[in-house]
Structure formats: structure tokens, C-alpha cells
Length: 290
Image 1 (cartoon, rainbow, N blue to C red):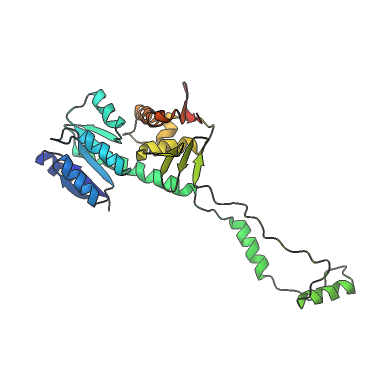
Image 2 (cartoon, rainbow, N blue to C red; image 1 turned 180 degrees about the vertical axis):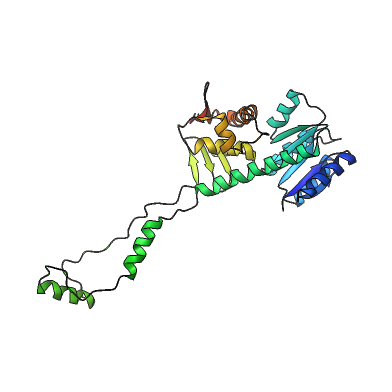
């Protein structure tokens, strides 16, 4: 069961959100202020945080900053401040979605489900990239050879000398013409668990990103976008494709959100003088090594 932390200083809002999420089968924990939220986050591993921006004392934006330092938990912002500039600020700080008040419980549930799906899809994609693959046909062929019985009949055209040599080999005596057998190479070696360029390394298994040896914290959505581009070096992906690969294409994800994720990723690499994403004007984005 997914565990959601709901943070809002209004009791009525907390009750509405808790009721809507519990009806969807989600476990819910409530916090009335930012400090209580941070204390709970230190004790529990939440799958998502529904976070009000306008909290007393420690506001939602500062709570998000501190949560981001601890790990990549998804964050959905709630706020009565619905202007575009406020939504962009929330996303720039690491939020995965932004829902202005007043809101309908049905829309809240839809957005929570969408954020959770995006996180799960990104995790599955990262796991699939380094999962070993088996060659079914090769395995079946090797099994058939292992089951085949040994024959005492010499092959057609064999001379008595050949037969004697075969008998000696059967008894464990090596023949002069015998050659050492080598192991058959694996036609499908395991996929690498990392993709990297000269300055950037993306660890798909541990979901970590490093630039010139330094760790960079990305949100699940940012990580998904970066992986979608870097696992296909040189390939240009449209915004629609990034919505499918870096997230899940649904009504809650827009092309503008993809642009915001790209801008945030670039901002986190900027102190190192590296831009990991190149823009192809009029088309989309691609991985960039500089």
C-alpha cells in the first residue's frame, strides 16, 4: 500500500484530502505544519507528499528543499496562489505537480495517481535496462545437445584408426588432435547499469546522477527525463515522447512541464559548466555531452 504524507495547516483541507485518498486505498499520515512534516519524513519512508505552500513558520517551499536533500520523494504542491509564476517556482524547487486551491477531490486523486505512476514507470525502466536477458533459442539448443545420447557407431567415412581414437577419447585418453574447448560467448551480455559521457554518469540501478564526480539530486520526474535522453545517445526525442518515457502520457502532464523539467535539470548542472541536454529547435531534445 502506498503511503502518502499530507501537509496542510487547515484541518478541513487535511480531512478532505485524507478521506479522498483513503477511499482510493492509500495509507495517509497527516501533518499540520512544516516542522511536523519534516519530523515524520525522518521516521517514515513516504511514497508521495501532498504539501501546502502557505504553511506557518517553515513554509512548503522550504519543506520541499529539505525533503529533496534527503531523497527523491515525489511532491505535489497545494496552494491558493495559483498564478503561473508560483507554479513555476514550486516546480523549480523540485515539485512534481502543482494543484491550486480550491480543487476537487477527484482531480487531486487523479494527480496523485499520475505522479505515483510516473515514479513507478521510471523505476521499472531503470530496472529493465540492467536486467540480464536470456536467448531462448540458444538455451533450447544447448539443452537438446546435453540430452542427446552418445553413439558407439563411427561416423560415415571414419577409418579404424579414427574409431580407435574415439575409443581412447571415451576412456579419458587425450588424442593428439584433440583441441581444448572454449566456453561459448554469451550473445546477450547483461545491459550496463550505467550510462555516461565525459562529465556525466547516470547510475540506473541506484538512481543516482554524478557530474565530474559530484552527486546531483534530481526529482523522479527529472531523473526519468534525463534517463530517457541518455539511454539513446544522439537520438532526438519530442516532448510527447518524453511525456511517455520520462513520465506517463496523461492529461496531467503537459509539454510545458517537460520544458520546466529540462530547465531544472540544466540549472542543477550549470555550476559544473555542463549542459547534459541539447535542444533541437522545433523538434525536441537530445542528450548532450557538454
